[in-house]
Image (cartoon, rainbow over all chains, first blue to last red):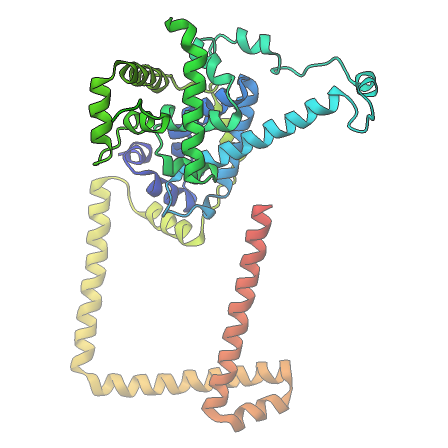
Length: 200
Length: 193
């Protein structure tokens, strides 16, 4: 039986152990299993397909190049999602800093000075219009998810799209369990508000 | 229960939590139309979220990832693979290989049994051989030690007797092990970078 067929029947921890032994087929199997969930999570976080691919690629490269750091007592998928979330949040924070810098000099003493030093430029993928026009993310619920704060978004996607438990989400996002519950509760509430007009 | 459900209580029911605490909540939902509507609306949302599709990255994604992944094969795995590589792939070929190995094992067993029946001769020959090997080894080691550390070191080793030689050997082995570990750490560090 070919190795790839045997691998598809193994649990994640065993495939990761084979990857640690330098089996290229095991690396490929891990990518095959998780390319869609990881890409989907990142895509819904950044709402830009090209950027999501780059970030998903970075995630897998980090994970696979450091597979020797994976501890089998934890779920492989939790470790993977943790890195995917960190890569994405790092990017979003950096983008936020970039946005601040074009809004005006941080050293500006007055509002007029800030206005004078601001640039009328928006980076690709940030425009709300672009986001709304995105075909794949065009449904009402996708648009409603996009309006959530990134941390709420990560929690709600992990909970209901990836089917993770509260404990797993807390471990994945390095958040206290209570915070995760609060974020998910608020996210559900905001989503219901955002979608209320469709039901009335 | 004489009040509507709190948001966290709606969440408890939504997450399907079980236990004593949820029984009165469920009873209240059955009796209260407002709370039932609230819970139903939350359930619809959760169902919609759970049916969101997974998106696929562009074709060739895994190839692009693998192009930047350093696959490191540990030496013991490489050795095992090499041994597996020597074994024939076909069932018949493997049967022939096992038959060959079995024949060799049988011949060696017969020779061993024959030698056991002539144990005195074997012991005498082995002693003789070992003595010669020992003399040659000691001579070679003494020459090497003299060349490396001088005659004084050789004299010191001889004065130390077997214990001295063992101690020197232990120090040598420890140094080799430390050097190997340091080398491995350097290689691992370079790989991570």
